[in-house]
Image (cartoon, rainbow, N blue to C red; front, side, top):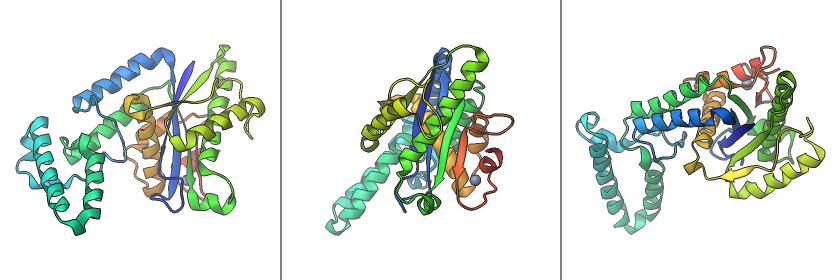
Length: 298
Ligand SMILES: [Zn+2]
């Protein structure tokens, strides 16, 4: 049995805040779950993040208050946290006291919230958390990465009436199903898979219906024999492996959008491969593309 943890990066809307929408899943054999979960917990605890959610898109954001604190790097995690919190509350107080800055106050409060779990880590340490986590994932030889990276403009030009999130989900689970079928054949051991999806209230009902339909009719690529049930939707804040799927989708998006490779090079090793081709990950783009995903995907 494999558990496939799924999360997204980027916005599905056009134009949205990203050029790409990425959905990624990591499939973990249940017999290894305890070991791998333990590795992630230990690593998070080393950075003072035991009870924090790894939200990969927020972690690398600059925390400008840190530059204003003398000897920040020499302080303990607790001291750093207190010093940043003090500056932040002073700033919010100032904004709140000026009625014409109300909008800026709301936005600043929101920005603070997104990074509040990580304020005790320097820029380098925050980057290093993601690198360490991606390297840990890259060492898991029996875990497979499945993903769909969609260039939204190219997709809209070709399929004007299709839903990007549904397309990415269909692609991902079709590849996971193919993997389970091949795996079952070669090992003569029937492998089943369960989908554990980050809770997305707007899509949960649609994806549940879609999966139910796939059980009856199959996807446009494959029948569904080895994936069981509809996706189980969970809160990413309390499920480490969903946070790791978030890290993978973020790394893939940063690679296809900016060719940023410091995380990508670690996690792309997990892509399901066949005859030397990384069939588990696709980059949908209209133009001929020279990225490693397109080169390896046949
Ligand atoms: Zn490409």
